[in-house]
Image 1: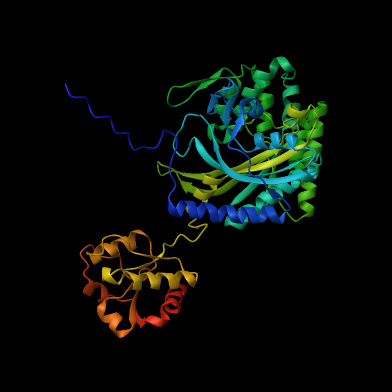
Image 2: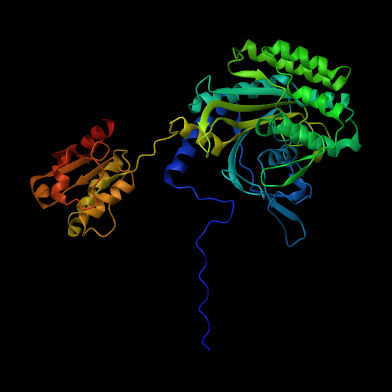
Length: 490
């Protein structure tokens, strides 16, 4: 019996991952460059850390995760160390701040951009690898650092093309929530598990609504698919204290602060959180950031377990249609907060820190939903090949265009079928095609075809049909670069 030939590998992306092609990569880079410009203007320095950290350094801070290595892509190294792909850009920053604490300025202001990986159940629009774009201040206990991050986040959204009125940066404070939990009888180390469930439940209020959150605060909740999520097991009165916190937002910041002060009652930590919120609101107002851009909102809690003070989230308020054609708000594209305990894990000493993370893919999707491209995604000018023996002439043309700063390429497929060259130019989203046959070469001219103005190329287009179309000019060969630039400008 003959050996079976080896099975060919399947050409498919692993579950929960995806590939990014030309325009998407170009748009992402253009958007990140604009955001980096804002970060830079605020005095933040770039930092690139390794994609791999020790599991011990990363810590266990992902929401909805109970086992140490769950939620991350981890493996055991040959010397028995557990390593993992980073799940965010904040945990590596805490390691860097501790490792280089004698060399870095304090406060240390850094921004970082890059992919992160989470070993979570993928879903529509939810991938296991995604981009983040962070800015953090390490070493400042002042709430002025938190206020600055919120202002910078608002500036970033406007810089990339989200107009004022289409977004809100919402600010809250975990100390206020801790005070509310204290009043609800959830203080103390023995209540840590319940507090974690409460945090994650409140964080889902936009998605699940009040009744869904109330179910998670009590016995638990069954979703549409039949999956059951265990609740915090709170008594009815305890659950209502927490629910009161989620609905504490009022028409003005001052009224919201007054309501929160009522809710935290005699809790010292709660009162401290309310005072910090008041200070942040005053600092932002002094810089001209009004409630049309940044608001106090007790509904913001953030799911990650390491936040210790102010927390914030950027929400896009314009409407889009979901998969079922229903109108809904676009939702959150960024979030962050103060995490004073993260560096302490390494040093044993309190190191205050605060920062924000922008969900790059979400923000790009928002820009597309608004009909705004973050970057120039036009393809290259294509120099077509009419005579393969004259390849040197075509290479000279493309060289001139590139020297003039114009993105250009020579068609390098089989030049026999001219229609295929035009289809190729169309597929590349090329703005202009350059054509020079024997007659044009003898006359010292080239034909430029404006593909943006011209109709899409018919599959059976012959060269003569192509030449007869509008938006086509014949120019002297010597004027090639100037004429192409003029056509691109038009």
